[in-house]
Every structure is written in structure tokens, then in C-alpha cells.
Image (cartoon, rainbow, N blue to C red; front, side):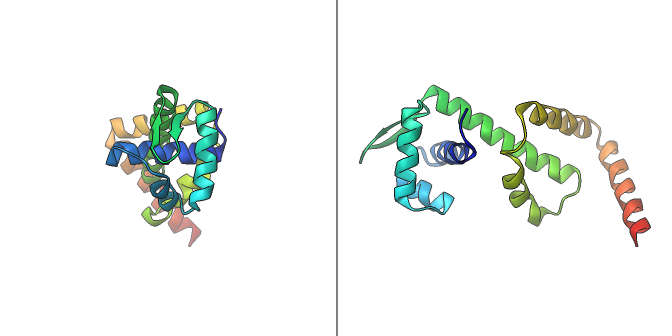
Length: 142
């Protein structure tokens, strides 16, 4: 299992390759706001753990294991964003909250959150009912 830091790198590399067709050390460093030397060290570790193949000065490619992990991490991130939107979290807080949550939930918990998102999205009336409950609770707090 990758560490939370490894997950951040795999997720970012996956997104860069998906968007640009490649991921350079400098692109990864910029996206994660870290020094290129930190990226090089992590990329070497990810290579050792078979998530990618890295050749100095030539770039990197994700292995099947890396692609599968990257895809799952991106899906987890998107799912948590959906969940927070559904439960009414302010849009300006969603990204930071997801970053804080995503590494601390088990895959079982992620799957159950997926079930809940599906439950709400299958019938928009459920979301409207949730908003009514939230409004009532806010009024009772004031």
C-alpha cells in the first residue's frame, strides 16, 4: 500500500499524463508545490515499488499498477468532492477538506460514501429533503 505522500504523487502524475500526455519532474513539483529534488526522490521510490518506470533525463511512465492506483485515487478524490457538495459544504472549502480526508478513510468507507452519493443522486428529492433539514437546523441554532 502506498503512503499518503506516495498517493499524492501517483494521483498527480496520473492527472498530468491524462491531461498533457506526459509528466515531467518540474510539472510534478509545480503541481504539488514541492522542490524538484523531492520529486526525484519520490519518483525513484515509486519506480522501486513498481508504480512507474523512471529514467533520469528521459521522463517517466506509469506501470499498470501505477495506472490502476492513479485512477482509483482520482476517483476517490472526485467521489469525496461529490459527497461534500451533496451534504452542502461550501464550495470554497471542498478541495481543502477532501485533501484532509482522503488519506484517512478506508476503502470500505469510500465505498459506503459512494453508496450514499448514489442514493442521493438517484432521487434529487432526497437532496431537497436534506436541504430542508439543514435549513431547519440552522434556524433552530439561531
